[in-house]
Length: 405
Image 1 (tube, rainbow, N blue to C red):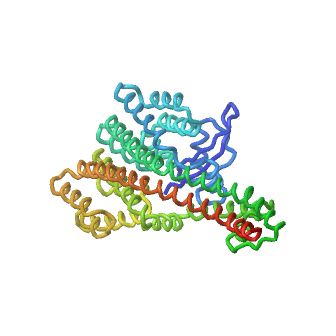
Image 2: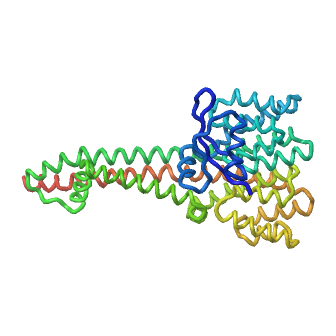
Image 3: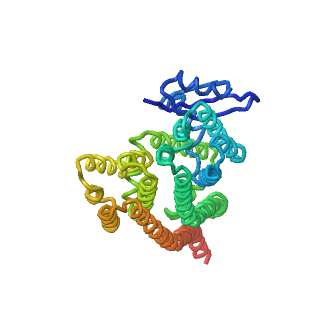
């Protein structure tokens, strides 16, 4: 069984290279790297502390927006009759990303050694997830590599567009939240202390709300308190990353995100659209249902992975696809019914892609509604916080004026 290895190496020109490679053993990974004429400085298997550090330095998977044009260009070159090795070399020279260029160099070397394109991509699961290799393998087996590469590029473009819509819908509330935090911090650090010294000189009794604000402002001005807050934030971030890095922690966080009151429905729609489009694209490319579900399960998250396992078990027992999907209660009745119609008509791949289009349109509408709801909510929250601070500051001032009269 193959394992994932993270490596650090130096090229012949002395350039630092970081990446990952899949091999059956440590010596096998080392041999594969040596065929590329690089000097390996470190090589660690996934799951070890050294590999965890290497994965953090390397970063996550390459973005879909970056990979989509590469696969489309590869499809164009392959359709024009350009040999795969030459096509990969063209992509490597024009990709503009060091990590992607390093992976493509390895792919080119693997093709020179007699490996197929899917096998070459499969050696780099961090840069090219197993889903891509499965689609390419089906295209190679069926003699439709160019069409499969086009479908893969379309799949990546659709997923990238969905992510961009999600980011765009959350951008305005995020900006308002940051502005609110900055304004509140400014009031607590700069304005509240001015009035606190005035009230102290005039010996004005302060209400509880004003005392709390003064205490917070004093803490924020203390270097020790700021250092403690920074350390606490760093510890929280590291703990969150550590939990997310473990399969159990990631599954727990994703399961929680599915059940949140407002955003949970959006998360379910996004995962449902991705599941339908990915499975439909795999089936359309000629991948068998069992292999397609296995590939989808590797990129699925949250309760969906458990659902796919139940679907695989049900299919092995002779059941239909829509029955376990309905029993999981993770999909809308419309989703299940359209899958059922697709099975009955023998067009399950086309029906899944149509379901994905419907879910993506529904997701966009839900994101627009969420943005319309969050904008006034954030403004009201900001206004309420500022009003509370201002009232807490000026209530003692009214007391002082009343005493003077």
